[in-house]
Image (cartoon, rainbow, N blue to C red; front, side, top):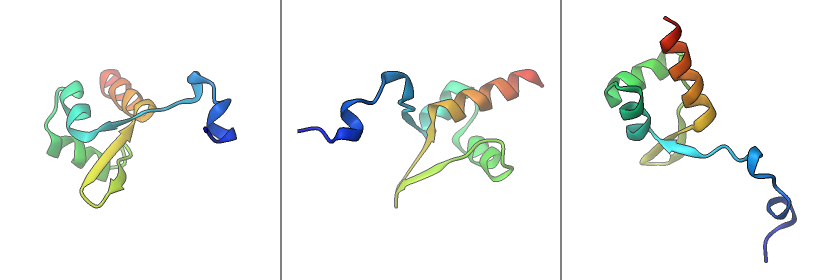
Length: 70
């Protein structure tokens, strides 16, 4: 049985987490370049588990748009 918080959650409020390799490929940069951008504060990488990192889709889109603006 779903919990009350997920039962009524609108689809528009969901912000999926994407893998760092996927985000790097979609940004047309290497994974190390993407991680360097995170160290500079250009994008926020989340630690999902001890060996996995991810990026919120909205954060990834913001990062791509900021790179296009340059």
